[in-house]
Length: 389
Length: 246
Image 1 (cartoon, rainbow over the protein chains, first blue to last red):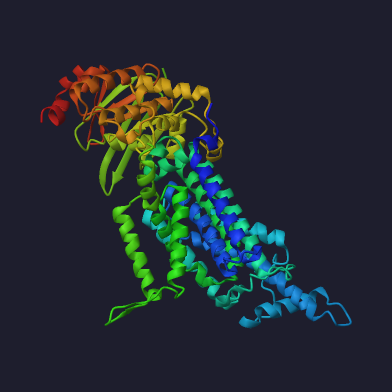
Image 2 (image 1 turned 135 degrees about the horizontal axis):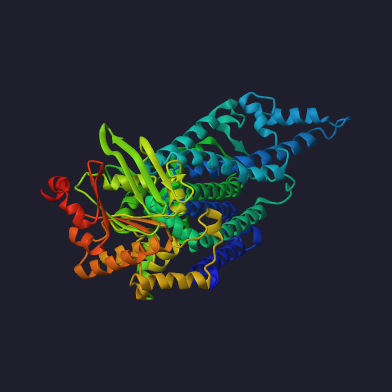
């Protein structure tokens, strides 16, 4: 018999312990818990980073392990955000409309209430009716289900069409870019029913929890994000550790050979593509309430390319490498683009990091590709684990 | 004795070039067969058709007792029906251990969900170890396939084919690039395998074919030129003209 999954993969335990330690430390030092060393906005940044780590785990599963370079997974992330955002915005607006009407002699009819909410939400795009896509927005359970179902369904249909036609390699990457571009262009339209380029906003206000301060809410979301990252990391590690992992790595390395072994390669790709799209949706649904706003720009093709860059820099084919890459690059990125990094005066030219950060990231990517093909994780392994092996 | 595989009247054209021209071929359930022929004779295309990689323009490919057509099945379905294929270049999964390579090939449920919840039993472990002993890699189970020598990779691939428990084994130039000792081992493996299943070996090397000591099919320009014992076909004037006489 096989030894238990954890015994064969001690690194999973190390990761979970590190994640728990990190969460506890941030909680103790945060404003919401009293110590006040870490500001609420930075707690939110850390919580968002955990969500980015989660979507990076999904990306590593689909690209690093199964060899599908999807450049569209951020679309699923964004969709997750939109799905939770619709409920947040609807329920919050409902509260506002009801309280505005509190003094009136007659209670509002359902139609009046619905019209009131629609006018509030869609005033900015000149609409006053709830579009059909908001049919379920009044129900938290239904929107929560959509977080999983919508990205999953889109990935299933898209993947079925693409994999069945044996679209692979760079052609598949281009196709996924087209998918995310089409989605973002559609969302940009005012009549898409999702407020065009305004996106959904005010998502940091949780309906029914108006009296809970943001300092406390930010901690709740940090915990939820950490819990989701830990849980899905465990799931991903379990999926790749057994025979399933062996099959998808074989598909990555020689797809035709796997076919002649009798495995339906298309079925496996579809499974991984859909599963990771759903994980991305969950990550997005946790991210955007912390960000406060989701708009079509979030789904722009470049976002999905960044996701691939994080995983490449962190180290493909190692789940903790993806987490490392996403955390390091996104945190450094938000530092450089925050304007807090001192500019470098060269006399004839001043290097402003908000403009030059992308150049630096580009050089970093080239350096990793040339000198550390296994990414940061490969470097760490070479330094610390080589001796043990 | 009914045939295990029956190919009849098959024609394949690539951009006007007839790679296979009205080819007919038959093999029984436990038979060793060598297929020889000059370059471009259609040997690899023939294998591509049987394994489902290439769809012919015309003709029939029938399989098994029930004479199922292989033409409507995908590569994976054909492989599950019992056709195993070994490529000329050894294709093993270099990133994985010898053990995992063999386990991957072991005849088991191949659906994604079946594989996801697969737990290795003691029986499967013993089966993998027995296969490794058969191909002479018993002490290499924990090594990465990438670290094996060329000959060892060829054997690992043959081992993976045996693990699939196919009823028909298609082997493309198994002896290419092997040392004389490695060739001998390979011959033994193939002769042994052919006792319980059909084995088709495509080979250039006459010496290797002679050692297999089996019926030979000579292909030329996409059709069968001659069939029979090696001595029989080498005496055939047509064969001498197109192939041996050059």
